[in-house]
Image (cartoon, rainbow, N blue to C red; front, side):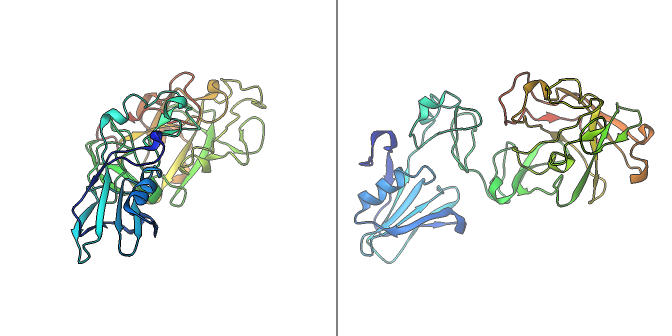
Length: 325
């Protein structure tokens, strides 16, 4: 059936037999629980809500429920009332392919994709991800995943990568978070050489007080780490001031394996973006971590950000050689 809503929001819906309702696997999937005068009105409410992919309606109580769910994370079950029915939005790649990453005019007021304020292009709506052909819902804990952004980030879930660099399942991310790790700013440093600790302030060897190393792993693309390096100030956006600056961090959970990383651009000048980086690892005591001899080179190459990349977007994921401890 098609919704009576405006054509931009119209959808094709599949209906179950009478006497059924939807049972979600997770409580958070229920996003609307009100009354509607008819199943058609409930269907219209569903199609006008981009987050809703499924509804059920009981005509005896007029209960209309919307779910951010599909049949991969819930089930249609038989119930005692013969007045209950389930409707689901039928999706296909053709609904997505012509719009994804196009200018925002292509997806204006469209339920399947939304205009991203950071990229000014059509992207998957919240709690969904681009899998190369369409926007399936992001996954819950312990579900198998096959790409970095496939899990419910609003629930602090990430697609975990194993020792061999393979995606495994959605789980709560345990590494590189401000609550468990401490990052220290350094300057006048290159791979294999000694470093100088940077401090808060303005000028040579300083970083902005509100833009220090604590922002590096806060999972917030709107914050940034700004280091002056060997410049008195960087108000002119000099691309060289932050050369040979960086940071190191101590892992509270002990020795760990780094298999991949990615950087995010800030809202600032593209010429300030890091392009080439080095990563080193150490098992030394914290008092020795400014000494170049304490470190072993693990990676020397691109940080994954391209020249003049769109602001506030992730660069490509960069993989370290396997077994880099």
